[in-house]
Every structure is written in C-alpha cells, then in structure tokens.
Amino acid sequence: MSLSVHVCGSAGTHPGPGRACSGYLVTAPASGGDDAQAPARGDATPGGAGPTRLLLDCGNGSLANVQRACELTDLDAVLLSHLHPDHCVDLFGLYYALRFHPAGPQSMPVYAPAGAEALLRLMLSAEAAMHLPKVCRFHTVAAGDTFAVGGLRVELRAANHPVETVAARIEGGGRTIAYSGDTHVTQEVVAAARDADLFICDATWLDREGPYPAGIHCTGAEAGRMAADAGAGRLLVTHVVPTTNSAEVAAEAAGFFGGEIAIAEDGLEIVL
Ligand SMILES: [Zn+2]
Ligand SMILES: [Zn+2]
Image (cartoon, rainbow, N blue to C red; front, side):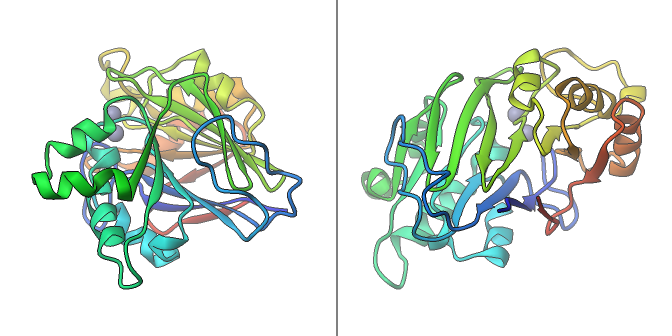
C-alpha cells in the first residue's frame, strides 16, 4: 500500500531556470478494488487493472517532466486546480500528443473548473478546436465535488484565490495527499489537508518580504501554519516564485510546522 507524488513542475507564477510550472503526478498502486469507489460523476476509469496516475495541474513545461515518469497515455486523468496559465497551458501539448499519437488518437478525462474548454478553444484553430472534445473529455468540477479516478478518491474544496480554484484531497493506497492549488490561508484548504500524510501547499512568498495582498498566495509561514492546523504528517512547500529562495520559504514554514518539510523541485518523488 502506498501513494506517490512526482513533482513535474515546482515553480510559481512563471518558469525558472530548469524549473517548470505546477504539475504533480500522483500514482496509486494497482488495487484489487478495495480503494475504488463508484464514481460520483464523470467518466472515471475503473480501478483494479493497474496503477492509477492522476496529473494535478499542467503548467508551463510540466508535460516534459511528466514524460520522465510515465507515458502520457499512462495518465488516467488530469485535474486542473484553476485556469491561470501556470497551471493549465501544457494542456495544449497534451492535446496534440494525444490527438496525433503514433498508436492513433487517444482521449483523456480532464477535470477542471468551469470555462476550461472555452479558454483552450481561444488558442486553437477552428479545425483543432473541433477535435478538442474528442481528445480532452472535460468534466466541470467545483468545490464540494467528489469523484473517483481508478484507485483514487478525489474530494474538492474551495481555495482562496482571485479566480475559482479547487484544492484537492486525494485518497488511495491507504494514504492521503492534499493539494492546495493556489491559495491564501483558508479553513477550507485546512479541512482538505486534515490529517493528510502529505500536504502540497502553495508557499509562493516570504513572509518577511510582505505584506502581500490578501486572497492570492501563502507565504512560507502561512503554509506552515495551515499544515500545523491541519495536523498534516508532512509538508511539501511549492509554487515558490523563482526569484525567491525556496530554502528560506521552507525555514519560515518550519517556524510553525514541526513535521517533516520538503522543498518541491522538479523531479522530486515522494513515496508515502
Ligand atoms: Zn500559480
Ligand atoms: Zn493562480
């Protein structure tokens, strides 16, 4: 029983040197069915056949790193936390890779807040846009939704960000991972991370360089406080803007959270 996260993009807001924007590959082991729940919505894949791979966010450059970990056709679904470019623009690359796959056209469930398909269409030619729904099977999701992807159960909560953003609590393989998406401090995200084995939390800024406007991102200190409030086992600080030192952000978090803290770097894998 285990659950793993492969960091495919750790940079906040824009890519940095050798760092892609948000992407986290969550993999659950093959399940005999004990963990698989009946899907509450969408076309979630059935559990039991093999490992389940869910890609959380698909920001600039992350798709290149996903392919270091698995084939794109090994992905069971993509979940977008929100529609800011640093979380969704590599969906274009995924679309083309699947549409023109050597084995023939493929398709993929994409769970995203309202407006994802319309936004993507804006960048595509009329011909490409016509094929989009066949390749990306969009499912509009919102806070409060639950759904299953193979051996993973996903529960969504409202993050605190200027556009509609969902935080995710993901259970599978006997473990729980929470992902804040982009968020400022909110009890909704704390609830998503309650007793999670791993809390992947927005820690874009340094508290000591603030104050920053409310309702956008967390500082390292705020990420640490949320992890402590949630009783999370481990904290992964991420989405640090490339002009800020990630180690300093993690040190701020350590002032509030006594558990293990890891710093997100592209290629990092955490097995729970
Ligand atoms: Zn972001
Ligand atoms: Zn954002």
